Amino acid sequence: MLGTTLFMNVVPQLHPDRFQLGSLAVHLIVPVVVYGLAEVIPVIQARSRQVVMQGYAEAEGPCSPAEAADPDPWPAPASGVPEPPAPPAPVPSSPSAEPVKRGPRLPAHVVDALKRARDQAAEEGRGFAPADVQQVVKVPDAMATAIHADLITT
Image (cartoon, rainbow, N blue to C red; front, side, top):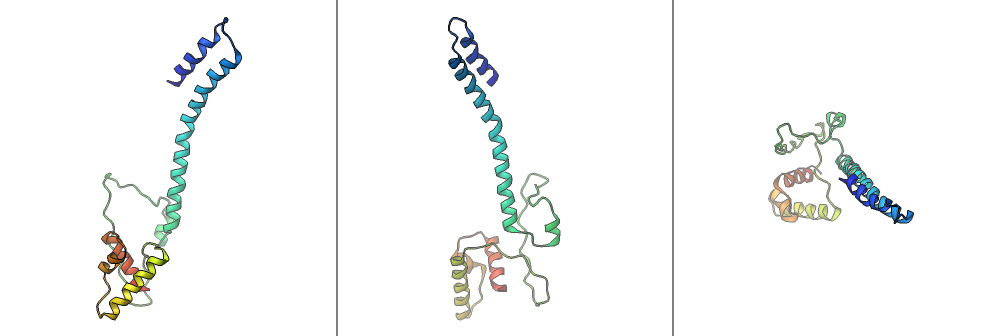
């Protein structure tokens, strides 16, 4: 398609009666630049996506030696249907137990508000629950459970 455009732009400029080198250059350069952009932009987009996904993987960090050895942190589901999230890891009951996966990283002011809600629940004599997390910050149930598990272990 771009070859046809190049041909249609250049051929009229080659007529011996109207030939001007500057006009030929302009009519030749524009389709060449458009072709170059059409070839380069997908490469730039793919590299940008790769950098973003690598940044996400590094920010989350591996949690176990098995995950650290996995070269693909974003495996695609085999059936094309997304898998449901895994249930949160159990809270260790003894200090010798292995460390659990930490919840999502939150800004300091949100963590402070969550700790205040946890302390307030303790002062009122009731347990701190994922619903208390959702009153402070609007997150899905699974994420609220992960944040709750992280707060009760710290």
